[in-house]
Image 1 (cartoon, rainbow over the protein chains, first blue to last red):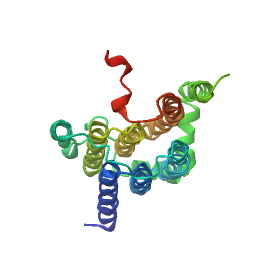
Image 2 (image 1 turned 90 degrees about the vertical axis):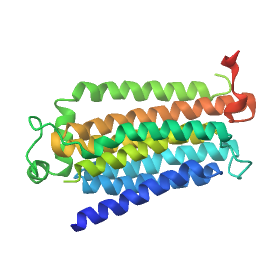
Image 3 (image 1 turned 60 degrees about the vertical axis):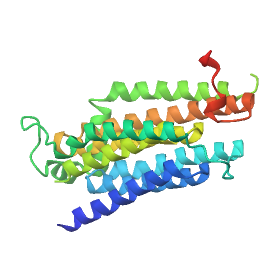
Image 4 (image 1 turned 180 degrees about the vertical axis):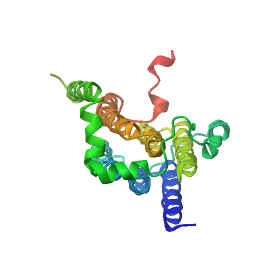
Length: 173
Length: 98
């Protein structure tokens, strides 16, 4: 096992453990903080998978902005104290376990999958692209050339979200 | 190199997110589980980008933008419901049940 593989499994273990803690903690604040832990270790995995810029964005946007939004709402709703558990009863738990188990069985074969040989790039081509265009340039170039129109549509989506959030959260306009 | 393991980890995270949505009753925690599922999909995209070209990393941008928009609007809806019902427990939010 190389060092990269060891670090990969360490980060994966942390991510999965923190995700399990996130769905099983009673208090919403504890859940949110465990989710931040998962997001950080996912950022580590992104670095190992040669997506350094995405990893930085993950920490800034997800672990930073979105989770702070969640914590603010938890604070506004005064849910910080751990109340009675909100887990479902035994029937709900059993149904959820069975459904999740079936889904896991269906998704597990992905772990042995290989990309189709006709489409797969040669090993290390992403590293070569990084050295040629830089970490940011590698992502920015297709974003502003091939995917320019989807990128512009994203701005419309964000505008709609801003207007929607203001309209919904205001007591009266 | 880490292609298969990354897909396996993302499948596990996705399933944990699904289980969270199924077992919890707190609307905000369910919302966080949805974010967890989105992140699992992001991990898939990044793993695929390593072998199939950098487009997968571009998609992660769009997923993040959608997630940010969804978090803003969804939390605003939760705030509006809380103002109306004084709770975020899904047992008491059942207007459509008839």
